[in-house]
Image (cartoon, rainbow, N blue to C red; front, side, top):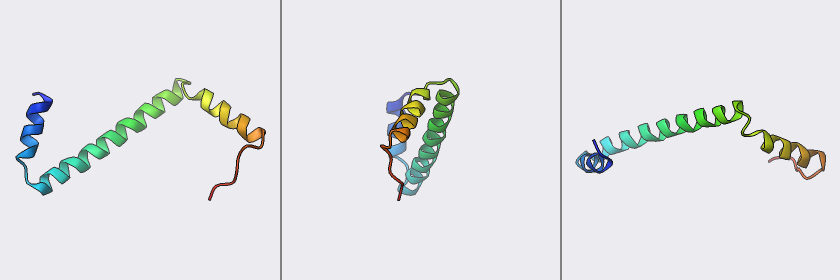
Length: 66
């Protein structure tokens, strides 16, 4: 099935059914994002950001949050 076919079929749905799909896709994408961030963190691909944040903190370039 192609994306275009899916889009065509989705347009045939009732609005409340489209909202259900939209909510499901939002949750799916958020879960996918979380898995990617976790994989990146475990692989060390975010280490440079941690080091940068630590350096900023040590240099006094941080402010308390709200």
